[in-house]
Image (cartoon, rainbow, N blue to C red):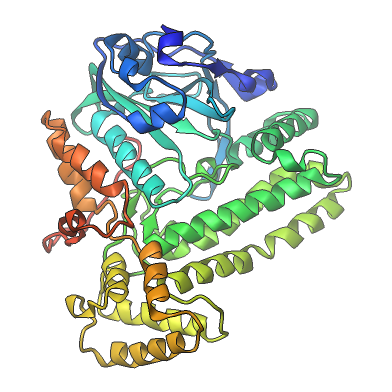
Length: 485
């Protein structure tokens, strides 16, 4: 069956020190049923999408059958969770192996929700249908938005219930990632493994994600620089579309620079840097406006974990790390400014651009303007459809913006095209996601499938997307997301 389906699994992670993982098989479930399969992703992985729709393959996605070549394991890692350091690990995830694609690329294939592992810490290791479909929607939306992300290959129902605040339908998600190496993986190695094992992990990360630097004389410093580069670029992309991760713990920050863990995430409607959706983020640590700062804080923790590899003298190592971390916010700001310029149709740079951008954001905050629709309205000269129409602050800002556009060589048409390519028509609006999940819970997957189709090309600005640009009806209750369901 492996040849028919196209599974081509390797297991490089098991060649790392055994202290970093535990071999562990998923717990079988009662009656797995395929709910949704990402056919295009399957084909890109070298899998036969048609064959994967079979009942036999549903058993693979549920963990009931282990495909040939797999070596299931749970990874060990640590993490600062809301600032508090603790030992963690895959408490409800099992890595089946790494799929080698026809192009020679390597991707982790992980089951999320396949039962308890040695790292479960009292949890049941299971997952509910709604949250797994939620990750499917948001991760694929992020892919459409051209933001580095883990992907979702399949969701199966288990035929079993999971107990949370209420009784929920059980499900398992198959997640695809460049790898599941995290800042927390290095924190674990730095705290509970030998220096040789930490070096082994770093060499593995370099080979897997930064192979061009493996012969560098200072390759571990170059690794730190590479992770800083990718993570600042990632967070800038989040900010540019109003994405709020919700739980930026160090165990949810990848070495590859992909977005991972879509538990309490959501997209911002009206612009407000203090926006928080997660029910457990009571202090706003991971609010929208704090995400760049937390990125820097997390990268500092990564640098700390690498200290033994940066220099044999600890004081020298600390100085090396501090030099790199001190530039994180400047690097982030460069990437964010470049992205914001593109959203406003600006090709060149002027020193006053930051003030121009911040002035617009301040006006948007004052009038509670929708983040996505404001930039969409600017793109198509439809500001009359926003809350900014007729306000003196916006009129003044618009004059400055038009003057700024007039000072660049590129045509107005070129600016509009740049804006169309930089400002999505649609995002996974929270009310639309909830609508799709509610229908799915009742056995209707058509709403989910339509939403996924609309989100697959968010920069198309097509007539079919118009309906999905509309804001939710006013509510007295703030939207809230939940982690760990």
